[in-house]
Amino acid sequence: MRLDRAVDAYLRHISVERGLSAHTVSAYRRDLDGYVQWLRAQGIQDTTEITVELVTGFAAERASAEPPPAASSLARLQSSVRGLHRFLTREGIETEDPSGRLRPPKAPQRLPKALTITQVEQLLDSSGPPPGTDAPTELIGLRDRALLELLYATGARVSEVVQLDVDDLAHGDVVRVRGKGSKERIIPVGSFARIALEAYLTRARPQLSRRGRATPRLFLGARGAPLSRQSAWLIIQQAAERAQLSAHVSPHTLRHSFATHLLQGGADVRVVQELLGHASVATTQIYTHVSVDALRDVYATSHPRAR
Image (cartoon, rainbow, N blue to C red):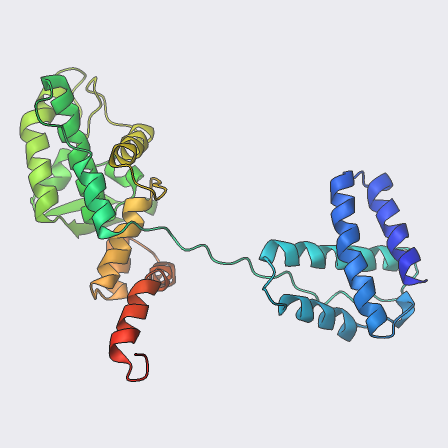
């Protein structure tokens, strides 16, 4: 079958029989028009002349184009080509599917977003009680500062921190965290977090606890109940707004920043793995790719031909 007739037949099929939208069909046509144009440049006029090597060659050429196409665009292009050849094979127009060896492109790994140390300091400073605030506001401010300081000091997940009991801080300079699969890990707590926690435990938590039923939970809400994960997320977002940070701050931002700053400071990746509670070091190693600016700085100052 001639190439243009094959494409028209396939597009009618996905439009009428599969009911795909006009927008999707139009996108498939653009992809397949490019495919047909490329095949004709190779001297191919009929679908029976298309080989596995031609299909994979087309995909490879498109993947190496400049500027590099987005992974989503490549995936759709390959889907269009595979769909065409599967249709032609089902209809008996092609005896074998030459697109069978195509593999979808790997989606780019999204690197976790980390704040700079200055941005973390701005976030933490914005979470405490402003000078001269009334007593109820001061209680909440002391709690919020302790919460954010502990999140950054330990790299723990928000869900892990809101599940902490007061007794988990029994030794003062470490905290016992229960992670995924109920696995426990011990994490050191830095001096800034210890000071914030001490202020919260002595000046705020006793008063908050009187407002609700007795609970061993470390962090309490305004009515004395255990602080929920959603409330903790809101506290982080409100602190980010007050700090006027340009970077997007998510519930995991302080965890990402904790790991990134440790590695920038020279910490071993396996130590960071243990602190984060990752089962595999491969999960932690994603943070080793985050500090591109730090790598550039080291290269620029260390390599004899970099200056």
